[in-house]
Image (cartoon, rainbow over all chains, first blue to last red):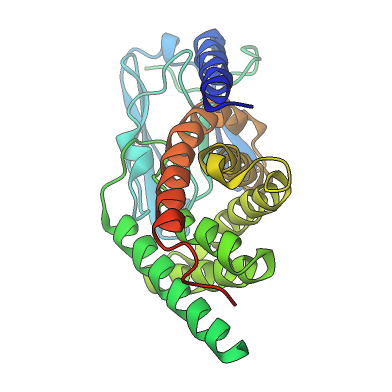
Length: 119
Length: 166
């Protein structure tokens, strides 16, 4: 296959990836997982007063901001700080993940079992 | 002959490790874990075409182990291993069907496999399938970084053609 055809193949693959990224619109409740366990489910839409969720982790603690402005990692003990740089969890965006601390913040499908503290 | 080969492999390991360590010091391009240029892949591909698959595997394992120890990111070892091994396995397979002149194609596919391998490992470790939402981002970055490192490896191979015959 010629280089031109391969470029076309990769361009199509890239478009497909972009399309899938745009299609991801879960929204709704937000789940927080630590070490593979769902530790709480939040509903940022119903939160009036922002609060901070503090999790004990391998290298200290990680602080998660929950408020009307969204859910984001305020601080983390990891070295890369990629989870902090991720910013707020957005509908259609990628989950917030801290691999060294094994914390994942992502949208969940079920909204019923929300156990968030609403301000 | 064997000593020459081992010496050359050691040199390549040092080069790969150097690239890996320099890259580790650079600020991350995006806040997405796993998105990086993967410059040390240039050495892996170069090794694959000069010394063969077995030596490429040995150099890859040495680079991953030493890189994790030297950067102090031992927790990242599982991700590096899963991604690196998936990428090398696919490179070895595609090498049979795609000519060396199109090394950028092999590299792009192997970089995508690298992202997929790392992602599967992350899902297994964190127990969170929601992380698969990263797949399109990792595949996209894999195409770009893989094509670049593949083209770079090809340029080195052309430049040094015939100099390393074992």
